Each structure stands twice: as structure tokens, then as C-alpha cells.
Length: 188
Image (cartoon, rainbow, N blue to C red; front, side):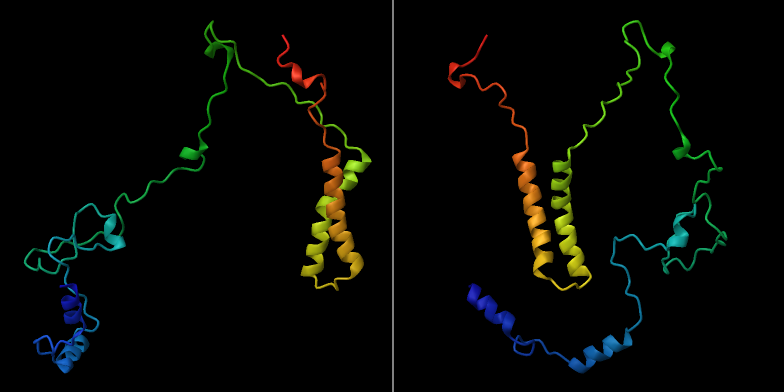
């Protein structure tokens, strides 16, 4: 059955028994060029952007020619909300908390302590980071600025990255400070 239906779809309209006048079809297309087709039944008619802010639910149907036309207002009625400067919704700020806001169960407002200063890096770590970051940047600059990729430039970029990475990995601290007898199990 499917082969029979697919055979029927491949045939031209004349072979299906329907006469087809190509000149009449083209004439209908050319005659209707530029005209907007009617909306299908049951659809809501299109309203332009200017008509969206109006209070009256007016549509752009041409079928209501008998109804008297009302004049449209020159501008939208209540189409937007305006705020005075400094009064908008983004200018709201919450009130500062005070001690009166807390009950006797509350402990008060938490203020975290200042974090300790970052440890200073030693010279070896600084040069390792310089190689890890500076090597790829040097190679990127060489490509972007069309420098000749000489042997020393490639060695400095690739070697700096690999050497700095290896140095940082080797200097990582391990958490195995208590290397006692690992086979003893839990110690109470």
C-alpha cells in the first residue's frame, strides 16, 4: 500500500486527473502581489505597536465599516510609568540594622574578622609563576606580532612554561605529615 501511495505522490497533477492551468496560477499570483491575505477564521487580528497602549480594545479589521470611527488619541494613554530622579525602584536601600532589631535570643550582627595577610612568596616560586604565565604570553605575542619563531624564542616560551610548572608541582606540600605506621588503623 505504501508503494502505491508513494507512486501517486510522484506523479504530476495532469496524471492525477486534475487539470492544471499554469498560466492562470501565475496570473493569480501576480494579481495578488502586494495584497495582504485575510486572517483565518478564529484568529485575533493584528494590532500595531502604536495601538497597543490605547485603552480601547480596537482592532484593525476592515469588516466593521458600518460602525462610526472614533478619533484616536495622539499619544498612548498611560503607556509607561515615569519616576522622578532618585525615586525609582532601583534607588531603594534597606535600613541599617540596629541593636533594637534583635530579640534576647539573637546574638547580634556578625562582623567577620579581618583575614590574615597572604604569605609572601619566595623567589623560586615567583620565577616559577613567571615561567608558567610568561611563557605562553611570550609565544602568543610572537604569533600576534608576526615575529620570526627562532629557536631561543620557542625554547624560552615552552621551556619557561614546562620548567615553571614542574617547579610548582615539585614544591607542593603534601598532607602526609604524620607518616607513622599507616597499617595501625584508627587511633583513639
